[in-house]
Length: 277
Image 1 (spheres, rainbow, N blue to C red):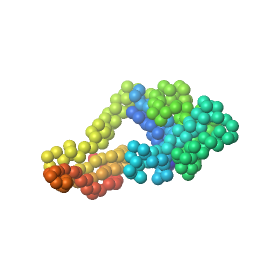
Image 2 (cartoon, one colour):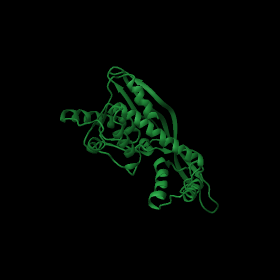
Image 3 (tube, helix red, strand yellow):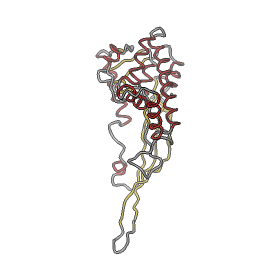
Image 4 (cartoon, rainbow, N blue to C red):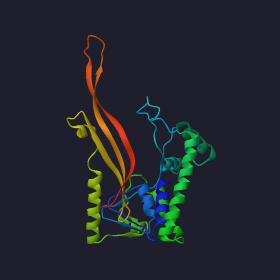
């Protein structure tokens, strides 16, 4: 719903809305793309499925972390539907008693309230996709819109399925554009600049940030919102890394263990505005 709200917000400020995808626009990125009038995709750009996963305190416990009650497994909306499709289509359990047993068995593993939320989310994501596609393709393209929604929600088979531009244009019927050579060079230049500024290829490593120092300040630029006239808004995380030593006493005659740890002291996290130079 955050992606849907962003599309509606952006459309308040423009008469034409175009998305440029240099690389991946999966899940919520695909939702935003569906709400555009046109989608420009490079050769390596991909869209993905839009089946949501639910996270809540009622989700099943993660068996790999049994001692942490907060460790829960996300429940995929389409995985639940796939379970019922397996029972009906592959195992041929179509009578009322068998389907009731399937539901009871599932409810023993997944909380009934989570199952109810799964159904609501599936209905909601289909409604959102339909509204967005009607703006891109036209409200009269009912059959094509239904085909696109079915593919993005379930028919693609996996949340990891990558949809390249030829498939998005020729098979799904989305409004796809290819950049020419000049446009591609500009897209690559902007993307490389954003990648370098956000350090997308450099994982945040506290040990590297500290080096040989006992303490160091850091600032991570995590999101950029830029415009020609409005300047730049940056979502920043700032803090200090402090190396500490802990002494762990062991039962005699074992000697104490000296163990170093790194404390992350968060000083600021939020948006900052920067004027264009």
